[in-house]
Amino acid sequence: MGMRFRGNSWHWLKCLILICSMSVLCAAAAESDLVAALRTKYASITERLHQNQFKRPLVLDSTETPNRLKGDIYAVVNYSFGTVSAGLDSPDHWCDVMLLHINTKYCHAQAGPSGTTLKVNIGKKTPQDLADTTRLEFNYRVAVVTPEYIEFVLNAKDGPMGTSDYRIVLEAVALPDATKTLLHLTYSYALNLSGRLALQVYLLTGGSGKVGFSVVGASADGRPVYVGGGRGLMERNTMRYYLAIDSYLNAGAGTPETQFEKRLQSWFTAAERYPRQLHEIDRAEYLDMKRAEYLRQQTVH
Image 1 (cartoon, rainbow, N blue to C red):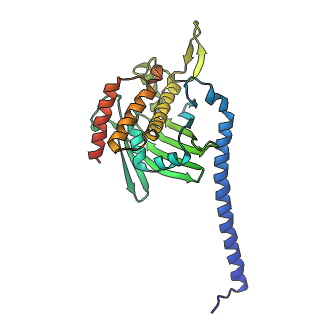
Image 2: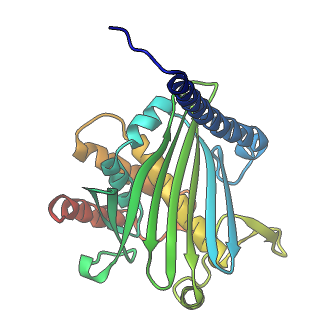
């Protein structure tokens, strides 16, 4: 027997259908806006992508407020959008990315009732026992996925020495040249009063004389003067994370071990293109340290 609807029931059914249709349309419109916004940004920075100190299509900006440090990188990479999306659409892959950073000592992805967490230990730029490092717990999620746009978000509520609200956001959009993709990486965290004081102590000791990439002036002999302080620190670390993402995507096919070796070599070579900002240890030291951390990551959970 066919289904009958009373007048009032039919009215509510039509309303439900309309609401569902509107939700789908709104979601599609929001996704379209994200694609359009990133492509508009790409058009606005085209000149900077082709003329910069990085010798690659990359733009780096940073901001510092009393309570927050933030770095942004826009870069065109020679990988298709499908390669980027598939390569990074896994928390385990993000752990492989994170471990390339010189200060990352360990990363493990753990699924739970409320989602996936990346347990990340950070420390010095030299070998360390995990007990001597600091753990950050990043909530990992793929925020948006479309055929032309994807966004990954990593959030950590608490950090060391008065820092909090860590955010690593990567969005990617397909470009007209199907072999290239535009990446936008944001790295930021908040500081309270004790965090600001700890930053000042670092800048007067271990961070003394270190600089970022933004040119803020010129010396008497015409050489560029680079930004220092908190912005310099943020620019160095944002670049390290970007180079880790690029090196991960560049590994190509192979066994996990051969891919890891290629990523290590790629990351160190890329970092050494900017020795004024990123040189910390020799290649052999970096490779030995990361190989040991990689082995530890396979056994410690």
